[in-house]
Length: 158
Image 1 (cartoon, rainbow, N blue to C red):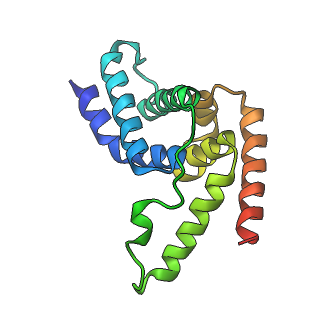
Image 2: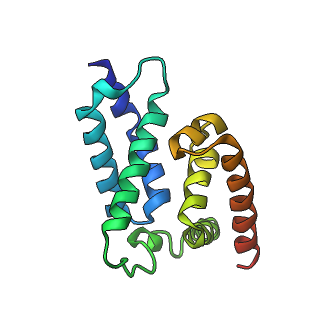
Image 3: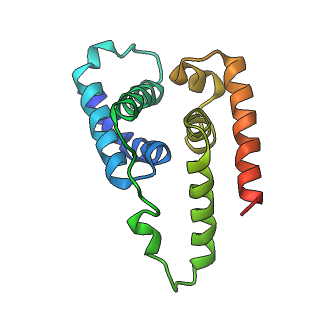
């Protein structure tokens, strides 16, 4: 029963990671639901003593890869609905920066988005992020360096 509560406690982080992968609120909510369901059904596969967040993020990564592969076409979404929430607001400049970062992130490869989301957004240690992505530590660090460089280049061009 404790694992159920721990999974529930991770829901905000799961949603944030899902948004980093999908860039669409509805897709992110669906991904969180799929991952939570898979985790609850497969609780017996969780190894005590390991990090629950890494296990859940790995489930989410795999579920998103499955979804992306099964789609015939991508959504033609220019900006999420909530992008217009703060128009005319004092926080418009901050909101514009946020939109610029989201746009730049969406232009990165899926591998780069995942590594940035896990390490820079979710704060997973490199070793944990490497396990979630199923890559060696060296691959993770070089991928992260390339992702940071690409993101900085995209942001400098905006």
